[in-house]
Length: 167
Image: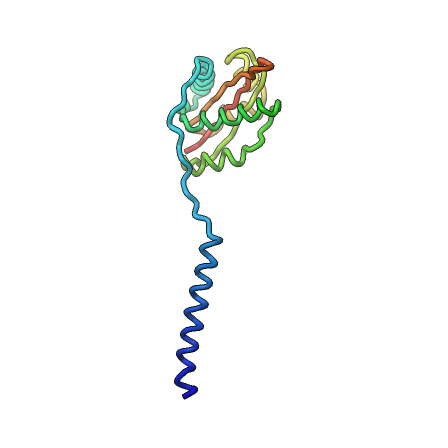
């Protein structure tokens, strides 16, 4: 009689263990969902001018012009809003921005230029071209980009975030 019950008990124990493990795992698993892509972005005349200046420079040195993507400009604007709110000039949150762009757009590489307090598109692009690191991003192996220029209502300072992406 004991031998007859043993297989049933082992079967019940196995079912209980499988159910318990499965339930426990589903509580820990995180399903990576693709972030929502922002499609709408309204460009200012200055933002368009910065993109044109960058593309004119790239073409002048034999490189492909970059295509703008609204989602990238939106992520750039988010960073400007952060910098204005905190009165800082930094790349805080770059990893999160780049991961979002990688997941949303399938980017292979992401880089970022920032600036503050330049009066016009030509002066900020000149400053970036006169910096080896920033120029490296401008002439880098990228296919797309986005830009945001926002002004601090209190100080009047303009903030620039330019993100470059290879898709």
